Length: 197
Image 1 (cartoon, rainbow, N blue to C red):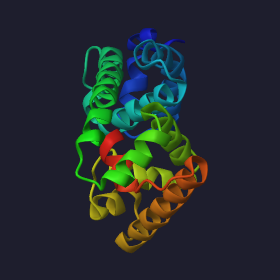
Image 2: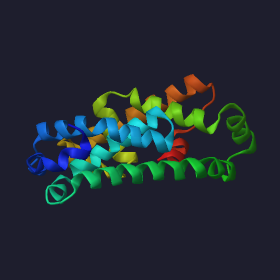
Image 3: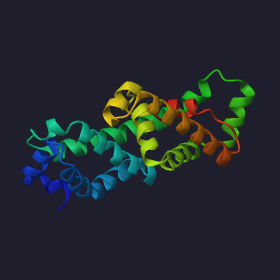
Image 4: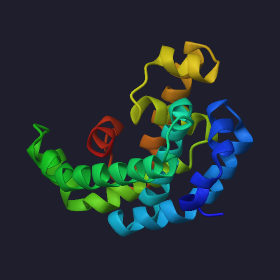
């Protein structure tokens, strides 16, 4: 059953609202093909399109109780994906200009601009994040993309704040090393995440 037709199965949305993980998985598999296709039409890149689908379903889970009360929850899901796609394009359009205007040393900035295209750096960052272990990747995304505090992440994932902090430190070290190895130029992770998140 496709995502567009799931409004005819209200019990799925009600089960989701109650925190039913099986209902969530059913909805995820039903929506993913059409959401991915819609995102691809906008962003034109597979990895960002996949991430938009993932972010959409993170929002679905976070808003599951409200979705259970909506007359058209499928429409909400597609609007969320559309908004994320548009947000991605806006960041893409402004990021390179932002980087060129930053007061880094001229030598360092020129070195980066000469060796790294915007799209290359963007795709590499997406690949690096995807290479993180699943739990560490989730913690990193909640921190950088959802802008949750360590305390909020710890509560959401039922772990200590110290564990959250350690996982973020490990993620940052891995991502910086991954990017440096693949680009042969060091770009601080804070710079890339400021641009792309």
